Image (cartoon, rainbow, N blue to C red; front, side):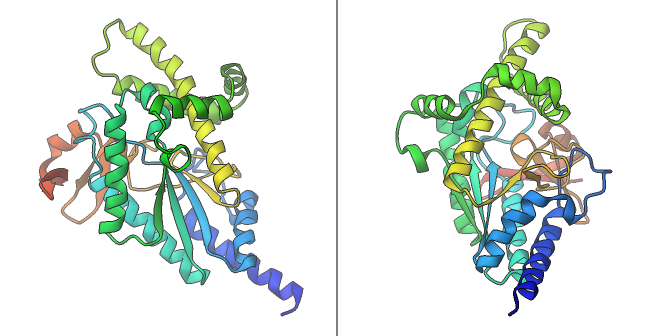
Length: 310
């Protein structure tokens, strides 16, 4: 095949794959035009796999653990929100295989242990969540998915040692983050979103509301530091991968935000909420307290799973 023809084929395939992702894009600027050509980072990464005739690797940090707030979630193990989200990601990879024959795989980079101490979730709950996540992938036969966490790179070291190692090696300084917040609206929005989540999830805090806000703002810096550190570690482990994110991202960012399930709040995730299923089959994510008012609890395998709208 002539070089020009080969290049055109690669470009068409990459654009087709990107279009599949953009259909589920989670954006900070949803009204801004978002043609495929506005995402050069993703197109370049995709081209590396397509030109080589290899399966595309996506990495998605997330699925850390359930929120510690009983007002938001049904418990500390994956439920219908995770089940549906993982099934969606597997279908997305299968759809990529329709336009790029070698297919695609999605590495779920479960990051709960990276900042469990900052969000108030015990490490044994995080272990149980990650183990059940992997078991769910096996049970549902989601063959395009796999789970990666700190155990894959640091083995059975104590959790505090793992966190300290990752932070020391990869995390930016607080000073650098503060400068970025002043200069970058997207980073500022992320910081405010994390601060809000930390405040909502703080159970048993003994102190004034203003003291809680100060504490959450301080911990939000730590969460972003660890999140950046985790991202750097993932990039080191998967240097060619196409990086996805569960957070909204602007057009042209190095990460592409991906929407897992429908929700009114662009920041809500399956691990900060529960699923409400409507009579027409439509599902949406919302906090447990809201879902309880609208539906009845449904069990799966003897555990709380989701709510069915009345």
